[in-house]
Length: 84
Image (cartoon, one colour):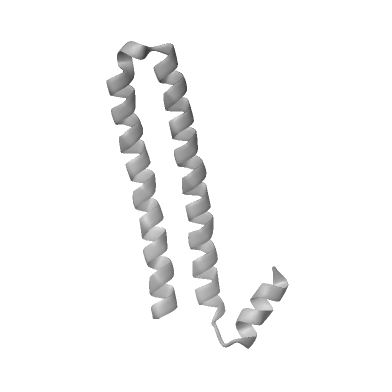
């Protein structure tokens, strides 16, 4: 990790840009894990109560969309940090 930071400093990139990108990467990894967990629990719930499939599916889609929105915001922050 330290060697990556030193290489970025030597190459002229600021640490703020590196920090923004690392923060966005951590956010994206967390979002991927969160959406995977939502899908997993939704499939378990559907297997337990097949009659509630539509309600569970719609709740799953809404929750996944909210997580994706936060992830897109993190990507935009990273791109703005690189450009500006």
